[in-house]
Length: 152
Image (cartoon, rainbow, N blue to C red; front, side):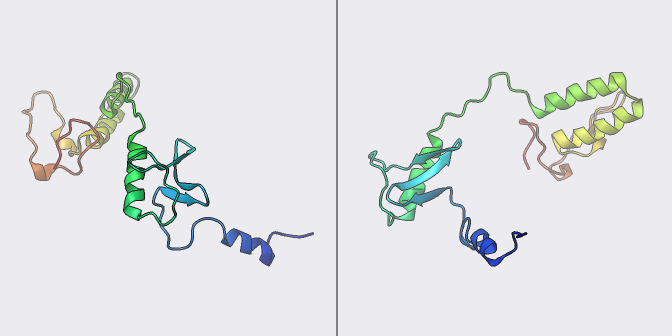
């Protein structure tokens, strides 16, 4: 019975992938074909500004990088019109917890999600009968995940 621990197996595994110390730049050279990149799982060959395919291996890295940026920026990225924000999801979750859960559970989750969405400590949560505190820039723990959250 043979196991996969003989020298031949390790030699083959060791040679797979990128060389040690190399970087993943997003583009690569295919022998006799030219410079390429992967976009949505498909190989796309890079082209010069005039539309000619980059076939030479010794093409300057700056030109290849510029072609790569043109290739990935040319892809249509559509954002749905009815997109749901993190804040909307957190508010819907808190409404469900308020209806179904214990009051202490609601308060604990509210404090955690307030920090998650706004980047502020729970002392800034609006409470009934108390004046609203205005946060200072140094009160923010992080930037928050709400699109209109103030940036520090």
